[in-house]
Amino acid sequence: MTSFQFAPDRRTRIAGRFFARVRRELQKAFLEGKADHGLTQAKLARKLGVDRAVVCRQLAGTANITLRTLADYAWAMDRDLVLSMPKHDGGANNYAAPEDSVPTTVPADPIPALDSQQPDNSPSCEDEFVMAVAA
Amino acid sequence: MHVVPKQRMIAKGRVSATRQLLTQNATRSPLTYMATLTKLVAAGVVVRINVELDGKLTWRELYAYPAGGQPHYAIDWITKTLPKLASSAIGAEDTPEEQLYGLLALYATGERLNLGEMYKPLQPHAAGVWELRTVDVRIFGWFHRRDCFIAVFADETERCHKHRLHAGYRREVVRLRDAIDLDIPKFIVGVHEDDVLSIRA
Image 1 (cartoon, rainbow over the protein chains, first blue to last red):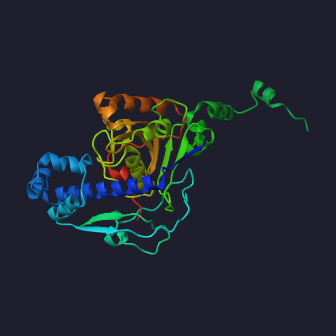
Image 2 (image 1 turned 90 degrees about the vertical axis):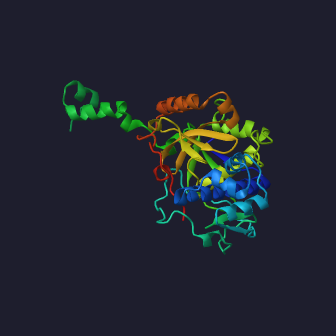
Image 3 (image 1 turned 45 degrees about the vertical axis):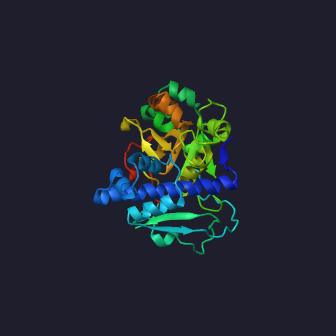
């Protein structure tokens, strides 16, 4: 065996990507708030009217988050929520990188622009949620 | 023209000392016989993991030790143990399989991963051992180069904490990495995002 295909069923894939993105965006927004103006879990908890342990668990992903909770986090961190659900085009997988190659270009701005989260005409759009917490 | 066999030339000292030294080094120096990752894949020493991305392009590379090794070798664990973990042991809404797939999909497509939350270097950093992290899953391995992670072991987060397995996994990763014939430098030492990952535009 020279390669291994990690391909759970599509339902798992959509859920996996969605949860990972939501968690990443939430953590990223918090870390940016921490770096920019000293946001802490305690401050966030006070603003949301919950215990700090709840915020800690939710940011770590060990407690469930409802849509209401997500919206409250966006409010508490002075962010907007962007959610889209583009159509899936059924595109086949395409492994572009040869085995011994490395990407050679690094974008100047590593943080994707907010517009890049919007549905576009690219051939790789999916019928899944894409979520971002926008500043 | 009279052709002198090579062995007789060496025996008679008619091959230069430099040439003999080069010949010896070709079989002794690790710099000359260590293999590229591609050769190790062809030889079955490591296996490339292709993450199903539903049409998106692969940006970062992912390799692992092959199945049939130990239960906690990454591929064995992903194929045999992970599907049986029906729900999160720690309380997350998504299953461990969804968590790992989500993380590897973000990794493979070149998206930003939160350092510390989704991947982090293990102490001591000089060992160059990293873990990919989800709420319920830990993958231990090293970055052979930027955007190229070699996964060695996988385990449940709760088990790692309960039995304090991090140091043991770190030592085993180093031991296995030392034993593998891979181009030097075998691994990246770093602690920052830019050290090991580039971000797709």
